Image (cartoon, one colour):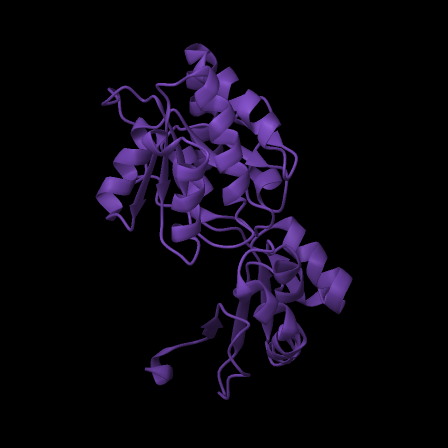
Length: 272
């Protein structure tokens, strides 16, 4: 297969340097040392990752040194490459893409749309417990609202335990993995997408939701700020601010015209 390729493309810094005569392109979604710094203190996995962070970082640097081309998915990741490794002269920003024909709005939305959608790994530094706190605040004001979590990962059990503990289990649905067709329908019919991450490069799920005309409320980090213009095609909130995210969610839930306006602007952003 390599004889048919012009380039080898490596996504993960957790692999050793690739031995090949072909040009090597590495795409960075985030740096190991920064990613690990944002892991919540939940369970033993965070401790293990902290212990091995220096090893992972040295592997990451070796991969960079052996790469002919470096791309970063957001301007924030680009600046991290410059800050931690001085590699800005060898890197370019190349954002993620989305199939805007498959991920598209529908003229008539099905269901009540009275649900807030989260899509992504159920993992550390995703802000899942912030979103649960946020959900509790929203459901106190709007008991009919549901929060739909789509994805799998190591924190599924902890999330389910927490929603039961704080008494909002009937308002929370954890779907696990879903097919592409079902995911598109979930985007299309959601009131909004909520992304409470503590650290991101540029999540594809954000672009997919925006392509479907669904406004997003996201933390003001990484690639989120590259594509969301606050108040125009979505809303940005500070990291670890469930109370502010709850206020923004209630604002959109209570204002259908604003929701539709932001959804149209979100779609236009993807089409541009």
